[in-house]
Image (cartoon, rainbow, N blue to C red; front, top):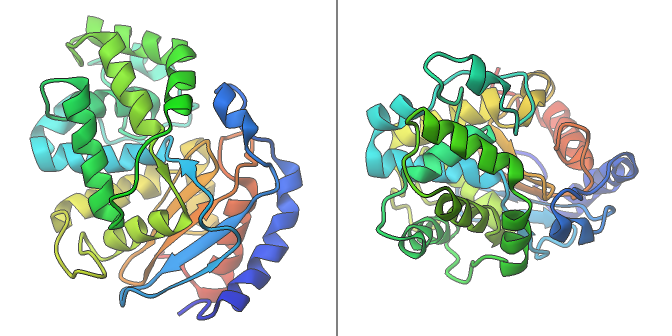
Length: 309
């Protein structure tokens, strides 16, 4: 079992922190550009409900693309596997997360997987509710349940900033609407999606979500089942094949665990049956992944044989 003490984890963090200089914070969403490039923190949550941490783990970040795997779980619970995968595929893609290319080339014109923006928008479209507010409450309540934290909410500033600059996502939505993948008002879907991406968590919250996935849907503290085992399995599979954008293949080789990143610098990790990991490091590489966060996971994977392969 890795890093049984905070001081042990601090040693790894100190080594990885040097890599923050190699990345830059996301600036295409103006509100995210305010992040400190040199920040780095990590929490590891164990099945017995205990955890270790290093860095400022209470620093809030927004979920961004990490929310994709959580709304996928919720959509699968609410709608079932057959309907969800009639609208979105299973296959990884080597294209950037916001690319429209594969939508145009695929027949039928549905997103290749739920972890790219087009697929995530199609999944969010399937969340049940009669209004944006009702559907967002459903998403937020599910994330509060996963984290055991009822204080979680979203950043209105980040949501508004994303909504105002979501031109590519609007294009994806209109393309999918033309081809019958979605059938709702595009502005309402984007309102919901940008609020979902702007939900604020810290490293401990991410690690707590990670251990739920690692335990096949069981909460480590209450021991209650939060999601069916097959839903947790499907989500972990997508995390392996598509979770780190178009660097997922390299990440699988170097680290080898289910993980999902976001352009706020967050990484959610789930080591099956062992522990959950939450990382925050806003300095990103050219794929949109936390530079120092990935390096930290590589160090831990090598030291403690984390790879599931």
